[in-house]
Length: 383
View 1 (cartoon, rainbow, N blue to C red):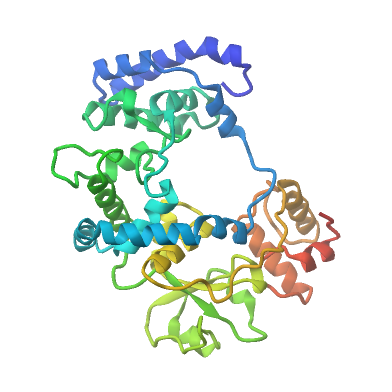
View 2 (view 1 turned 60 degrees about the vertical axis):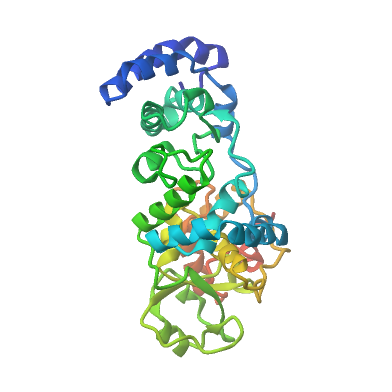
């Protein structure tokens, strides 16, 4: 129901619910669950508002990381690591995922279970399924949620989560729940809301299924030599030996290990900020959430919980938060200069970063793919 007024959307909602009920039953949901749960589903205008809301400004890496990896969260994470050591050791033994990572995901997703979200999941998903913008995706999620209710994991009236349907301690979407949630406490149910063993074991199995490599960490902070060629931060994977030969060291200036493991270089704040070598598990974390900022935050929080200190080169806090209009202007200007960003959309994706890197290289700027002051000035863009 895109573009409909609230009253029009309310008017069409009952007919949509009838269609969803038929689809759910056709997909194997019991007729009783489909009928009873969807009969109680309400159209939530607030959910549509949240789905449509796009932040005016992008978040800088410094702001993102400092909000999510702070002393309070690290301290709480270390406390919970000790408190639940027996459970976490069991999950690690079964899945290969180290305990600090499990606690880090838990901390980032719900602040260690402090907030799961208060939206009624069946109503949220029904509202989104009846809205044409992403109807197919949310119809699939709604049917999955009904199947979860069908299996007895949780009563419909207790199924609360985020506005988009993410649920429980580790904020699984319903389809992820069905595929990866497990019964970790042996009570015959998969309860990610009230059972921490279920939640932690499910998180471990999800990461294992995504391809977690138990032999290596997520990545590490590194130092780059003067006059480093930042074009190498384009996603290419080199061995640690090859990075060492290029002058890259660990965060304390020590030589990198002579290991065959491959890594890509990530510079989330450009050449002025920290640099990271990202291993295979970095991509596994991004299978949970497709954000480089998120993956670094999980990895760094896990390191801190395990006893490591803060970043040796913290991200600069004076970099501007670019608005979507700013990014649109950058994309249009680059396209006009012959550096293809694709169709301008105001989102700083890989293609835009590649175009920025090519533009920087062609104009004798540090080719870090970051739209810093020099790029903006060169393109004639004023914030």
